[in-house]
Length: 250
Image 1 (cartoon, rainbow, N blue to C red):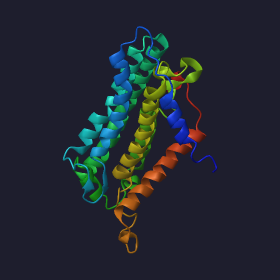
Image 2 (image 1 turned 30 degrees about the vertical axis):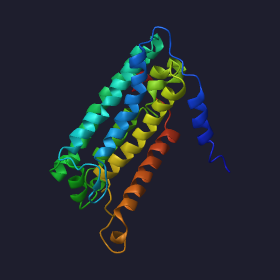
Image 3 (image 1 turned 90 degrees about the vertical axis):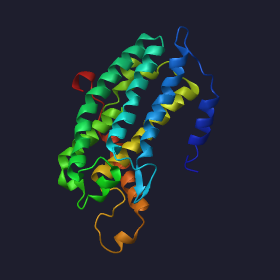
């Protein structure tokens, strides 16, 4: 109905396709890269608080852990391009890593603002100290974080990591079947992860917009989910509205 279940046979079909590894490729590195791409996005969820006291591990250095786990995706891009034994994949990887590293710096600086305001690196503490959403306290920081997040995820208008017009498919050009699926999965898990982080750091996480009844009677997980969906919608709108930049405009 309405094509709602089309993704399921598509997923099965791509997993059943032949997994082709190029001649001369470094097979171990070639196969580890897509796994690392997914892993880097999923590791972040260890410290994501869904509600008060509901988190995998409330690390006192939660933000530092986010930075360390998230940076693994840059290594995955370089591994994929280098191990493919393809000059276009390697060029795509160089270009991708340059973009990821350069936009990581403003994103990390934006991450430090809620840390300084809350006086803690723990994500639970950052949420609980948002008596007013940091979205209203430091709006420019939120803009910088969202733009940097789009570039970090390789989403439009910064999807130059796989610009098909000049690089065919960037660092993923030699991938097929399940490894290609893992790269796509890693990209979309990273989007949801960034939406969750933006919700926690700037939108008050599981807290209601205003601490009044009946809003504060709603379970925190619902507020968190609603804010994640809102941020996902904003990222989708950016892809729909803004054309891709040329590399010299990046």
